[in-house]
Each structure stands twice: as C-alpha cells, then as structure tokens.
Image (tube, rainbow over all chains, first blue to last red; front, side, top):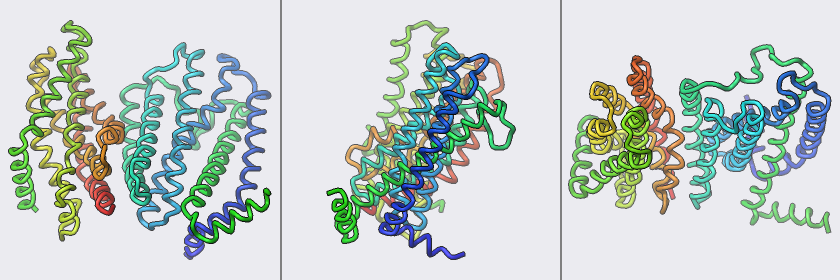
Length: 251
Length: 223
C-alpha cells in the first residue's frame, strides 16, 4: 500500500490547506445533524412513559459519554502514531483533543447528575459507570496537566503519548474492576451488536445526535489544530503568507 | 541478569543506609495516616474494624506514592540514569530491577508493618494472613505503576503533586481488589478471586510497565 499521501498530509502546511477545505463542509454537516437531531429529540420524540420529559437529557448525555470514551482511545492512537512514526501532527492532535475530551466527560457527568436527581432521587451515586466516567475525567486531567507542566514542546508531546498509552491499557482493567465493585446503572443505552431496547422514534434522534457530536468534535479539533499549527510555524514563510491573505480578506 | 539485580539491590541498600530517612519516612507516614482515621471517625471499634481494609489500603497506597517521588530523582541528578540509557543492557531491564530493588526496601517493610497497624484498628488476627498476602501482591503493582509517573515527571522541578495526579487514577484497580479481598474475608467469603486478580495484575505490571518507565525516562533524559 502506498503511504505517501499520509506523509504528505501530515506536513503542517498541507494539513492546514486540506483541513481548510474540509472545514466548511464538516461544519455544515455538523449544523444540519445537530439541528435535525435536537429538534427531533426535544420536540417530536415521544415522552417516556415513566420518566416523562426528563428522559430527554439522554440526548445530550449519551453522545457526550460516547465521545468522551472514544476521544481517549483517539488520544492513545495519536500517541502511538506520534511515538512510532514521529509525526508531529499526531502530537498536535493529541494535545488539542485532550481538553475537548475532558469537557465532554464533564458534560456527561453533569447531565447525568441532572438526570439522576428526578429519576434516582439523588445527584450522585457510587455506581460503576458513573465512577469509571469520573476516573476517566481524572485521566484526562492528568494528561492535560502533564502536557502543561513540561516546558519543552516535544518532550511534553511524547510524555503525554506515553501516559495516554498506559492509560488506555489500564482503562479496561479500571472499567471491569469498578464494575465488579458495584453496579446499579442501567446497561448501555445502545450497543452496536444488539437490537436497541428503545422504540425507533426515540432511538433515531439519538443516533443522529451521536453523529452530530462526532462531527462537532472533528470541527473543533480541526480548528484547534489549525490554530496550534499557525502558532508553531509562525516564523515560516507560508504561515506569514496565509496570515496576510486572511488579514487582507477581512480588511 | 541476576548479578545486575544483586548489584543494584546492594547499591540501593547502601544508599538507603546512608539516608535512613528515606527508608523510614514512608513507614512513619503510613502509621500516621492510619492514626488520623480513628481520631477523625471516632474510636468505636466496630466501625473501625469494618472500614479497616479500606483504610489500610489507602494509607499503603499513599505511602508508596510518597516514597516514589524520589525514586529516579537522585539518579537523574547525578547522571547515573544517562549511563543506564547508553549502556548495552536494555533500559527496561535496568529500571525493572531498580524498581524491584526499591520495593524491597520500601514496599516490603510496609507490608511487614501492616499487621501491627491492622491489629490496632481492630482487625481480627485470623484475617492478618490475607491482609499481608494482598499487600504482598499489590504493592509491587503500586511501585511499578508509580514508577511510570515518576519517570514521566523526573525532570520537573515540582513533580510531587503532578505525580499523584497521574498515578492515583491508575491505582484504582489495585485498591479495589486489595481492599476487596480483605472485605470478602471479613464477611466470611473466600478472598481467593480477588487475590488471583491481584496476582494477574502483578504479572501484567511486571511485563508491561518497564517499557513505559524506560520510555518516560528517555523523554526526561532527552531534554
């Protein structure tokens, strides 16, 4: 297989150009999915027969939780790519994705607490899935803190990569040990391998919103990476030319 | 390989004999934390007995963490680490022996001290073997995982708090299985499952963490 396209894309300049072309399309797709999903979920989907309207918070909660978990996996993959092939773009991706993942994790925890109050009668219970989500948040914070503590940019990226890989090996162990420790949470809302237990008119908007959240993540990540690349390459001639055209267009 | 192990153990022992505070401080810290709990939750012996597995494990975990902060620091500062990195032996082997040697002088005394403190917390003496066994299986994992954090923060001026932030989330499975074993024993169930899990975590940690520790140290050295 020919991998030259990959290396060509991973050069900061061509990544900046290609991502600039993708970004409007991705943003458009994200807006369409987000608006349809939210409208469907919050207005048209039927209320739950037991939980009433309070169940609708899962339309934010589940996509955020999905994203929080897959972003951590992405961090480890980016870390591996950065360590093995020494691709700097992967380092940028890792460090720029970590705060987004942390916020998604926090969002999932907060929406979960808001949903838990009317449903379980309490803001927080020490249940397995809540606890492992909280631990995931701490893992994210660890990566962000380590990245900020090391002043050398390259060392920081590689240290974060090692930590992300160690974390991702540990994550299943943490998840199952915590699950064994205590379980009260309902099983996952949907799994790829099984037929969903929700009716289709509740399930479809959820799927759309999960996709919308992934698009949102891609858009925010690309924007953050582009900014970081501009900062890192600020001295090169192509960045100065790009900035000139940007400023020229706005002036 | 064995000769390296013994020479490293010897070196570690010599260093600790000259700085006995490093050997004793974690043990004093361990005892102090365990003394704080009865003062905080009250001297009622039934309550203390029921929460003692968790207390002992949390205190042991913090004591190990505290002892790890200095694990690579002096070697980093005097240049021994650089010698290791350029030597013909694999760095991962060297760090594994270093961490195990460190465990012999910090983790093992902690395990040996734990029965005394457990008895003070009111743990019935017939449960002591399970406590010792669980700590014996669990503390090497704590040392090895903590060494990953110590390696990643080795070049940093103030790595102590960061080390705790990086390492404590990774300690959670050990904590669950370790205190779970004792909890099961106290409630009259078999602790075997938990102990086997701890043993498999030890095997995993011994096989995988040396590579992460070595990679972390190389990052610190390359600065």
